Image (tube, rainbow, N blue to C red; front, side):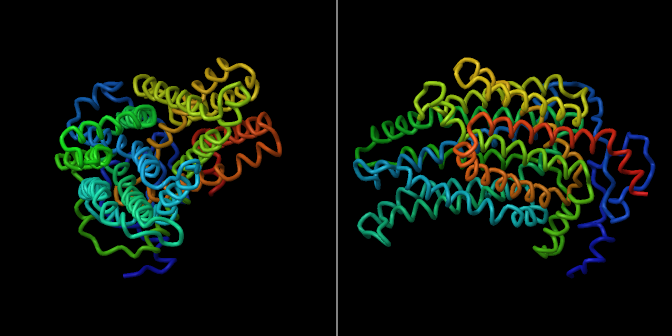
Length: 485
């Protein structure tokens, strides 16, 4: 049954079953918040509970989390090597001599980005109604199957000629990329929704720290050893038969398949009432997610903080090219600067996972935002010192972990189970938009304003977001409650 707008504001968004992750506020403020008057659960306190044991040891003793994390390792590795695979296939099959590869790769990137923009929120709606374990398993197995069928499809279509001046085989790569990205939009919110189901609230920060470390490690490993790994796989497969040429696809597709098989062992303990509920009213459910975010200050602001952070990193990926030139490096070596940022974020995540639990998320975000802003200013002032630039980039990644991980933990801990898919779907959409705009604008801004001015502007944006989060999640929260009266 479709709810009218007034009914949606006064009725809980999904079912009325209490969520095991709900926590009473420890702020001492008993006044009713606007979210309570709208029928949503109230904001919970940002102050984390003291876990019985800190650091990574408790989550390494959690079998369900280890299963999920093991699946993530293979899935993330496949994600990062996938682009390397596409470039290798283009180079070996479609690119002509002396023809730049950038046009081919840009088309692949567009095919990968479109589903992220179109289906991010939509996927979250269905994730809330489906078994999250089933989504995790199916999306990995299907992605693996898609990649493994690429060699067969390219072989079948190799004599089909061209369509609109492009080989039919290249359209196969575009379609495969589009479908793989679409499945990823379902996998991402399901993965984020499962973490709070299998990890205690006091250990969420450590769990997210380990996840961030894994993502950064897979990013560095994927781009650093992806090409030699695929080449080695091809060599080994050709050693079996001279006519076989699918070693690269076997590595990527096999990694997805292994992730899916590992996740078959996962026990989520999820709320089956949500899974067996009525079919979703897509736009109504998306509106429920928007209303939930609107009426929960800390969740809303955490999304804003993550959007700002990802915008900065997207801009940095563009600005790294002229920065590398300024430092006397080859433009093609800009990846070393980005890898330094990844090393810093992995380091910050590891530190935070061990010693970050005794600080509030708002305080960590303020410290992290200040550090990111300071690192951006340092980058602006180190355009003629390669070692200082690398140091600032490492610090930038380290401080960024102090923003990203607590904000992600806040969203997980304060969103009820039946709303997580919608909220994480909205988060994926927001982050994809935050990644897209700077990619288009950063280069133009650098040309018009100069590298230093752009870095200073990004620093101002980050510190403004950090202060806003401190105000809303800290002392400003109590003031806002009084104003609501």
